[in-house]
Amino acid sequence: RAPDDAALVLIAPRLVLEAFRPGMAPPSGRWAETDLPFPDGLRGRRYEDIFTGRTFDPANSLSVNWAFADHPFALLFSS
Image (tube, rainbow, N blue to C red; front, side):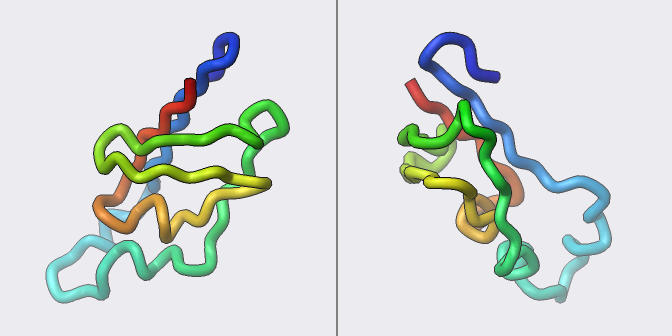
């Protein structure tokens, strides 16, 4: 969602229940080479992950590995 100058981006995997079985590699490593492209209207902003406080300035895309470093989802806010 991006009303006016603010934007809210939710990043969550789908169809990955098998990836979270006990004994499997850490989930964040599964997306090490995956980037999420940002549309033109969402680029060039500073985002803060609401749950971790980490910030990111995506030029064209966001590393999913970065987004999922602490937990398997991210909620990014830019004002």
